[in-house]
Length: 206
Image 1 (cartoon, rainbow, N blue to C red):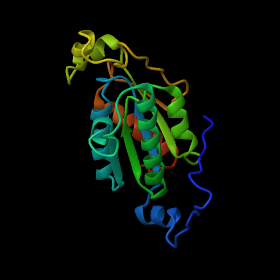
Image 2 (image 1 turned 90 degrees about the vertical axis):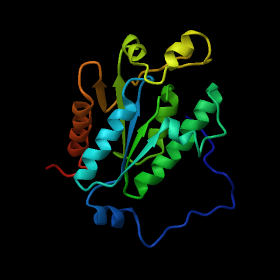
Image 3 (image 1 turned 60 degrees about the vertical axis):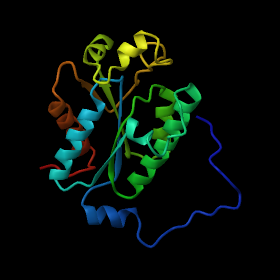
């Protein structure tokens, strides 16, 4: 994605005395972004919570950024048009980049339906700092779960531009992890992510 990354020619990036490597040495693990993407009802938030709990028990500093929560504050001004969805993910991507640079293992649970936006989120992070996790579920299973009743509203036409019904979802091409939540429990899915984090040296194995 080609994008002007400079807000002003009068800005200067400041380097601080305590850097990323210092924080990571203190924490005992690397900073990284685990980006969970998938349809509403796929299990993203549930897996994010379980993953965070498992990592916390191992002494890993985590932060969860969840789609609904972010729209209550940082992105309260955004709707669900394609343009607002893009800006929603752009802001979140920048926050995730900051968390990674601070040595935090941040876990994001966003539908993030557009491939281009997820590719942008990856592109602004360092090599090895970004894991795209496709939380895969058949649409009919997601509709059966429908924990928020959103699919029923979308089918009645009460929610315009609803991903999977009246708006597209572009599946990842080469995600680091694929989780099939119709076949495996949230705990098993969280463990699969932990295995990927260990394999990349982001966290230590047990």
